[in-house]
Length: 459
Ligand SMILES: *[C@@H]1O[C@H](CO)[C@@H](O)[C@H](O)[C@H]1NC(C)=O
Ligand SMILES: *[C@@H]1O[C@H](CO)[C@@H](O)[C@H](O)[C@H]1NC(C)=O
Ligand SMILES: *[C@@H]1O[C@H](CO)[C@@H](O)[C@H](O)[C@H]1NC(C)=O
Image 1 (cartoon, rainbow, N blue to C red):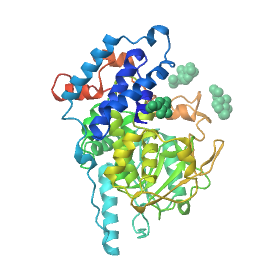
Image 2 (image 1 turned 90 degrees about the vertical axis):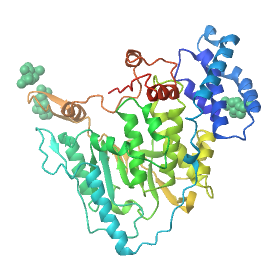
Image 3 (image 1 turned 60 degrees about the vertical axis):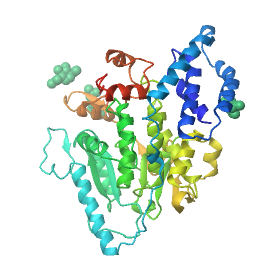
């Protein structure tokens, strides 16, 4: 099944389809070999060969369908060389060592003290503590963290904390309105706002549960969407609470009582009836977040090309979706075993999704209970809507004789029209920076680490 996902990955590089498909499939052999010693490589090769003719059906032109055997041999040889070269980079075994968790034997007082410490730590890491006197050029509005103390409930597994991010704490007036609205609907919740500096700070921390994370991050060249995808999962893993995209808006059912904080995780339904990646309510140190990061790291490290990375599949909702099912199907497995099984088995199917119905509590690994709530029809979201009112006509922020949509006003005020929306690396950017289409993530990491290439950062 991992082959299947690799085949999908191969679509990333259209230009070399004919030869590269086989190359990628061989890559999957390498992957299997590295993460699972027990796999019979000959059997896999045989299956790949059988399926190779099937794959050719999807190729575009008759020329592209031709696979030159000498070319294949050459690529196979290159692959073997690469395998040697990356032996040291290969899956660090410690990434899959089971983690021991102590029982929580803290007293209630201690728990409350720890909770308040957590609020202080979040104020610090989000940059709120040093931004108390922040002023912003109008129409931008400063956002100060909202910290609700004295509402500690020892029955909460998911802390009553909302997290948002945007590059700066000086937010457009419409975003300020959104944040105030969340505050109004979820009064008992603290709200922490993480700017770009806060995001960078969290990402650069030492993550001992994810020893290959810093390597994998080398292949994330864009500051935008991919970094935020990874950051949100790390943040939830470390602190828990609720992550929401900044363009989300609370809908009628979004009340404090609606979010089951006694569960270990509470998701909403995505457009595909998958667990939402744009709204995650979860306790800290949850296996779903642990597995999502491992999936992302694996996806990144095995990128066959740094061109046109499909964010959704590599760092986005697909990674969470894989982790969600690995968690539900991983009862009795250690985190290490579940991660290994997830990476080997590829994307879940629709049947698997239907099996775990919405609005019902399901138990997964470590006996943790989770729920995924139906978020309503696209034209009537019940808990969380996206870009609500963004089509409204509003005055232009800098010219009172003009009107724009609210969405345009947000873009104009933040001056970052394409901020965090980039999902494909432009091949022109890549070429300019000397990134060849055939350069794999691992080769790039190696080049950066040995000083052969300067790390590339793109906005
Ligand atoms: C070939 O690929 C299909 C999916 O495309 C998969 O269902 C099937 O099991 C594969 N065959 C072999 C022999 O691996
Ligand atoms: C406002 O927009 C109008 C119409 O485009 C333009 O003629 C005018 O110069 C603008 N005013 C300012 C202050 O930019
Ligand atoms: C802008 O919107 C206001 C209120 O809807 C309207 O009265 C005005 O004519 C509009 N201005 C332009 C330039 O479209």
